[in-house]
Image (cartoon, rainbow, N blue to C red; front, side, top):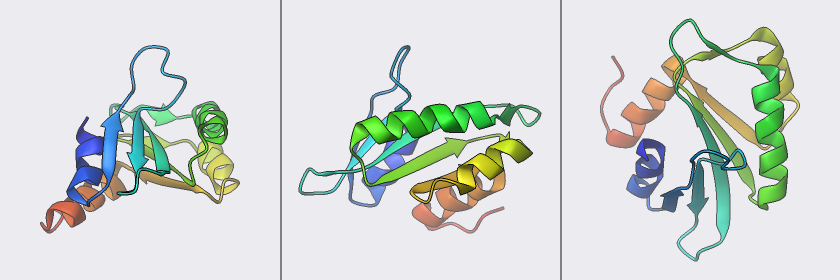
Length: 114
């Protein structure tokens, strides 16, 4: 819901749709006209947990089935080296992890990152 709120603050129509067996999509982000602009996956991890290449590939499959133009992956943690390499293979994918996520939130809310 928090990530959906970030996009609502930017003027998009966003809805948190994630739950158990959500098919890998946690947030749908639509343009004002209603077209599906992006889908997002959100992972809340500790600072010692890492997003795996498998997590990225699973989201890639969900994205491909969604019909969205962009895919966004948000995590409070970090990516493994293999996950970063896998993500580079998806030109439609933008990842916000740890510090990048904090900076993005600050940018949306107009506050300097700490």
